[in-house]
View 1 (cartoon, one colour):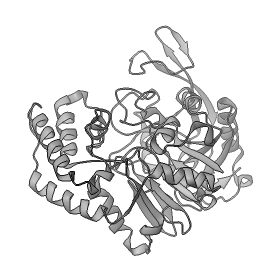
View 2 (view 1 turned 45 degrees about the vertical axis):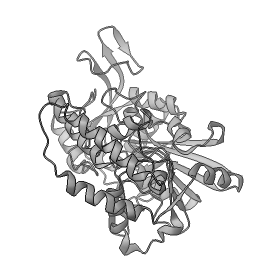
View 3 (view 1 turned 120 degrees about the horizontal axis):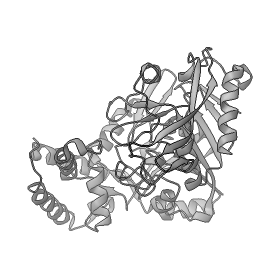
Length: 423
């Protein structure tokens, strides 16, 4: 019996979807444990590109069962659209996809509240994807939420109308206005609720317990990144769920002592979408080059990602709070062509030099301290073996591995499934 976790160690967009897809052949079950359609996992293989928002990234493999766990929040409209987009691939969703009864539903009014709240903040906005994630999690913790299992309840309509009316009353309290056609939104939502009922909806924690007893291999798939965790991220510029290893326990009902390996994924540089502090962010030609070569646009929002050098202070922090056992470095190919590459090893602050992530890195007095390493010019994207890597790229990997005191087991040199090299 094995339960392994796969997590992002930065501000999301590290390439988790690709690695889940690569690893799925070694697992029986892929289980998504938190987040919602604010996450976009991009997979590329056989010349095709796929972006998943709610469905786990193991869905294209013929043998693996994919589970949307209780910690996920589901928008039926986006979910059914995902299903329709996958129609050409002949996937048997009745056999390959299970949905937790305890997962919470995103209502149309959750999306309206999200938009109204963000609009009211002005320059202080947190960079929400406006998918209704935050308000849905607020209802969950406030014990007002509606779960997937409720759509089969005799009082489903009553629950839905009661919560919708509460949200409509709340909308009146926001300054300014947002334009919307609620009648149209509701019609589409209720149509997709009917479609959702046709899927296999289960007590997912029981299913996973039985799978563990039967010796099945399980991979828990996270969304977003550790620095967006609601407790340990760069608060308040965070997501609304637990993106760290602890989230797999609460988001799937897996006991901590059942977890074996924790795979941590990071880019060879750093990116961030939306608002919030970013100590190593670049505003020069180097940052522009990273964004252009790395195609750094949000899979969900399409927004340009902010780019900067690798931040070892933040990475060490994420590794510690997650108990990471092995690392996977993505997008090393994007740094090809830089004559010198910088790595942040500490922060200079008003109180001195810090090698541990401060309580608040929004402070303007935080300045990254860099070490410089020689770059490489070779195109890595066609390489298929570690022995083909240029020495300076190998030195870069070794430097990071030594600094983080955690082995780097996989190096990705391109977006395709095949561009994945084991060390």
